[in-house]
Structure formats: structure tokens, C-alpha cells
Length: 297
Image 1 (tube, rainbow, N blue to C red):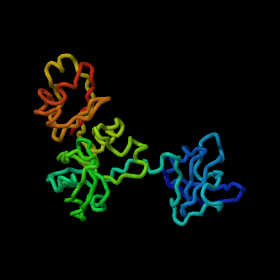
Image 2: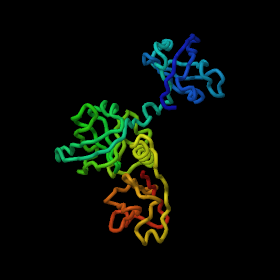
Image 3: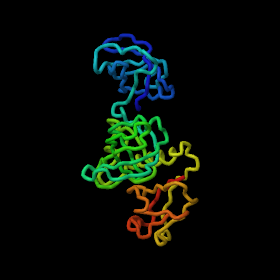
Image 4: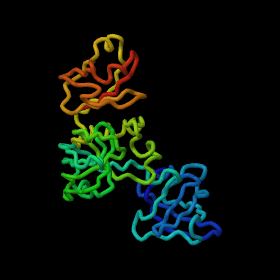
């Protein structure tokens, strides 16, 4: 499981093991406790779950788990405040996607070509979260390219910042929807190494997550979100366009299932309710049977 907060209510010695009464803050997560999961107490000591009351059935909240020390031969610390310990499955610590808020990049200007830095202005949906931004946080633009914050110009709500390309290609941030997040040490476990490889391909599950997060949350409600897939016919390839079910009010996100994400005005263009690629990047890529994933609001 991903890290879940728990309260250690009681501990009894059964050396070389300890029996600890565990209460999950989110009781719906309790049944997912498994042998070899790790408990980290409020002091940072770690213990391996060897069994629990009811094993091999599901763990029940408020029951006891038998623990074997990993770091220190001492009983797990009892709670000081509810939920001050947590349980996780090794290999999944710190992998919950850390997208902190979404917003819009309004402007960008080249700050330093040799350093691959840009000065951007932006508006963020959650101003409080944006105000917590710091050097080293990341911004993902709508093309899937990642930038690292190197100077927080506007510390109130990150309305202005200097960012640097994580992969130095000389490509400025795309205007439009963006995500601001703090990368975690094990983020690659969730969706590839870092958030972007040198070719700017996007691992499919990350791409789907980010696209949904950008477009459904940018308004704060997700109302009116259009998200669907279309398999291209011979006539679509001949026409070099497809009809959308409605006229988009926001930027349209397009990717080829199993392939690369596409870029507005570079690989495709939207005119009214038509998405076309005549003379653009997708013209030489698309074939009959290819599936496009299209998202907009």
C-alpha cells in the first residue's frame, strides 16, 4: 500500500517480536495490510509485519499486528497524536503523485539561454498551495515538458517565477494549463524515471493522470469535461481532420495511444469543432486504426 497514517494504541512484548494495536486513520485501508508491510512509528523506527490477528484473512481496524524490528530493537512508540505513525509497502514509499495544484502559464520570456531558464507568470487554482512553492519544485507544462523552479519571484502565490528546463533542449514553456508539484524521492516508481525522458515521451499512465488532473481540476470542478478516444478511419486519414462533438472552450489535449503526446499548433490545430493536422506533425504519423485520446472542456 501507499503510505497510510496509523495510530499505535498499545504494544506488548513477545520477544523477539512486538504485538501492536493499529488503527488506520482511513479505516477503508485497514483490510489491505499485508505481511512484510512496514510500520514506521512516530520516532522513525521501522518494523516488519510478520502476521496479524485474522491472518490470512483481511486485517480489521483496532486489531493487533505482530512486528519484527528493522532499525532498532525497541518497542514501537505509542502515539503522541492520532495518525503520527504510518504503514507502507516497501517500494511504494513516497510514490503518491505529488501534484499540488494546477493552473495556467500566462506568459514566458527567455531569461538566460546558456542556463535554459525562463521567466514565467502564472495563475494557480489553489493560491495557498502555490504560495508554499520553493526552489526545486517542478512545473509540468501542457506539452509534458518539465521545468524546475530556480527562483520564486512572487512568494505570495507563485504568480511569477524563474524556471529551468529539466532536460535542456532549448524549448520554452508552453502557455496554457500546467501543474505545480513537489517531486518525491521515489516518484519514478509510479511513472518512470523523473517525469520526462529526453525525447519528451510520456509514460502512458502518467500522461493519463496528468491530462485528467489538468483539465478536470483547472476549473476546480471538472464540469463539462470531454474525454474520449477515437479510432481513425481511412476517410479520417484522407481528410486530415476529425470532427469534435463540441466546440472546445479550453486547450485541447491530444495523444496517440501507445505513442507520443502531441502539441497544439505544432502537431495539430483546432478550428471550431474540427481537429486537423494537414501539413502538421501528425500528418506523417497517423495511420488507419490509430487511436487518439482527446480531452478538453
